[in-house]
Length: 312
Ligand code: CP
Ligand code: NVA
Image (cartoon, rainbow, N blue to C red; front, side, top):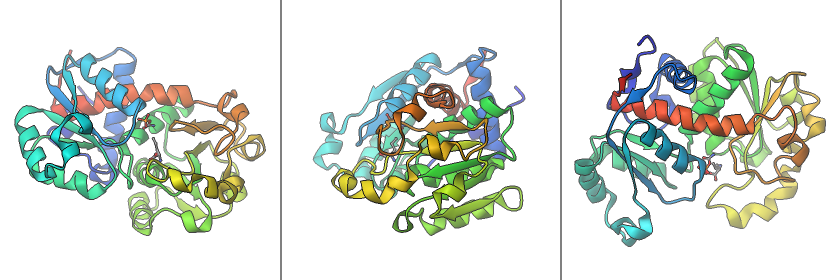
């Protein structure tokens, strides 16, 4: 198959910078072909899910994606395993390595993910950490590709908190030639190392803009993207943040400044009336449900790719 399904065989995905531009584009093409029913990868292997934070989309899309490959899933809930009782990650990783074929981890510290990857030889996938959410971005890019037919030259504006999703969007957009603008309050900008890495990956193919000005950031953009103002683990900070983030709310007046064909994206879950208004989330320019569906096709493509699945 021309998209190179075995491109990522045996590989870890700890962050988007682990991938090349070609690998991301190839993964999107595979997901599109799976979605269209043109290919049907088969891989009767076992995925472990080790999630220490809540999840609906990631948990279910990974699970259904694995079932569609003919595989099985084990949900390693921390409260039902020795992980929750403090067994060292190094020990857990070496044991799970002997049972599983691939492991997706959602947790707080990026370092915990790195530790797992160091001690387990199976592919370890970042299903969200405080620093990155790479799997989300495959679905976002596929949704953009479906809406506009191509990626290179588009402009995506992210508004809100310079969080894990913002970090991965910076890297993902830079990898595929999408101009990325990130507008946040001044004390909530993405970490400088992600901005620098994105600029390096973008080269002179696309631009990377970090700003505190939401109005300028949305001017002519092809996509507006937002996420919650307080991520998992930051719930105590949520109410204090509301007035600080208000100017970055994705509402009809901000959307009017974007391109007339602009689409609206949100990784979900959404807080209506905070980072996005109900009329925009439910409006004709919203693509959030397609975006959520695309988690499934891109997760299935990623699993097929890292497992070296057979195509039927
Ligand atoms: N977007 C996303 O990752 O959703 P979940 O937290 O429900 O997995
Ligand atoms: N930034 C959010 C994303 C949830 C999918 C969080 O980490 O909670």
